[in-house]
Length: 234
Image 1 (tube, rainbow, N blue to C red):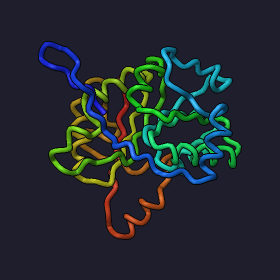
Image 2 (cartoon, rainbow, N blue to C red):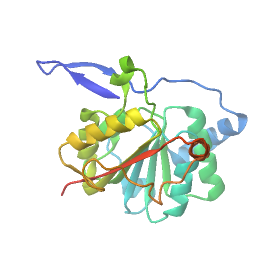
Image 3 (cartoon, helix red, strand yellow):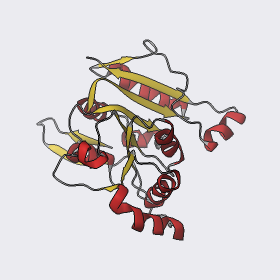
């Protein structure tokens, strides 16, 4: 979501980029949520995260916004044990399932927020502390009158820039061509970032992003997926 600012720089109401669908948690998800939250869950507070305290080590940190049901994030955490992963999702069934996956796979390098990503970034994430930010298949808000609700907006990208280390990466992916074009326009105009593929070019799917079942199905049907990789300038 984005914060809008009036001409006299007074904050206006924040436009949310998501619809909070309560959704029903399965019994397994409820049990995993209750049992694992003390170990894997992170909450909003006025204090910045102490990564050494949270993970017990210093390592490159990856921040994913909107991990859905958690399959790809769990797979990445398993395949990149040298990195620490923080996932943010507003829908509790997905949070419960991701924690269950983490337990099943014995993952110690994964923590989760069940909160609004903007609030998490503003309240808990120290500046210049993230190596990579991932936003995969966010709500495209495909109707033109809803485009203002899209997460990828100039102000949001500058918030991410503030939280990324120099040389840190923003990785975006969408299966909506119009949103891909919007993302490319926003990122190409964003101060302090360079397209890792060259101006105006989309990236091939990097090896570290697993292909989802949904994506595989779309590929069989001829649907496109667009990846964007931008690096924060030194």
